[in-house]
Image 1 (cartoon, rainbow, N blue to C red):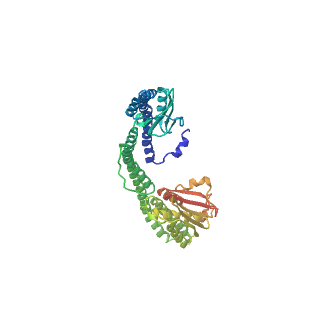
Image 2: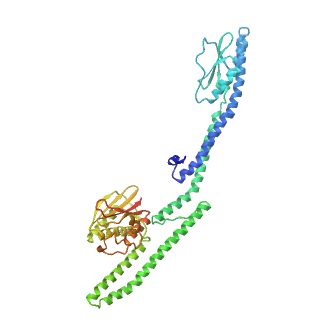
Image 3: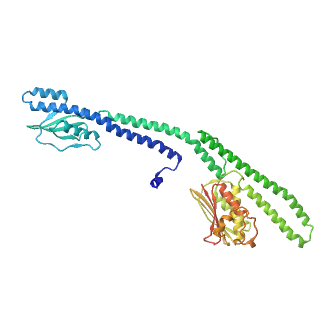
Length: 434
């Protein structure tokens, strides 16, 4: 619960999370090493160098006290120590240092401890050190180079650490990317298969990734065999039953009209059921996906259905572009939805909306609709909801919605049922992600 708020800032992709796992420890390691280096190494070096400089400052102050007796000694000491000496009337300012000057804190502390006469230590200029000391008789200002009390090349270690840290991070990321590439290919192949497309895929990468890839290939092959076997089985059944049905029709033609007509209707119903079974079997395995303009496709389907005598109109068509669809299967699904709509209602309205992220094909009717608690059942094969649908409009075999749902799933989408806001009947939406 404590880290729940952090999830919204974390990367979503596997690459991003792997890079975060890789980079975060490197950055934290550099920060810890940097802090330890400043705290231990440079603090010790600065402390030692400042103590040495403090002894030199003490020597200068002692020489200042006797400069009237031996002025040449003071000049020699200042020249040898490369220090500048002056005698101001007052102290100009207080202790100061730049905010990022961590070693300046150590300099100030050590000078004050080792040289009691020092009143102010000014480090405003990162290249010079100014000390104000009050002797027994006068105020003294001593100035010298900052390199004498601080490590002069401390930045080189940081530069090397950052450079090689970045270089090794890039190398590690390239290696990590090569290790994650087979997982990405497996995800792409799985998503494509879920949308009804089969793309070339060969397992690679680590042993576990290869095992997952081989398992996916085996699963895909089994599913393809099952679909093919189902299609062949129902095709064979349909083919075998067509011959006796034809004989039935020939035999019925010899009967009287009163006896023949009911039996012919039964034979035609059996023929229609066989065609529906075969259509349902082909819905998952019919054709490869190709780039199709959905708006143009739906417009053509509605036009064909209207010419066939169905009361259907296209009320909205927005968006442009193409997306991979199995045209025959998608056409069958939409025609089934329109057929159901005009069978159980008086008219149907169709709309299609294509956006950058999704495709939505909506079919609405003015029929009795389907109750919310029965909609999931209505999507199952051979489901017939007599209380909810008007059976006087024509009998079905319960496969229209099932075929549409299977086609939507084969494209990686879903078929949603609801209540039409404009017509009051059933609303069926095929929603596909682009």
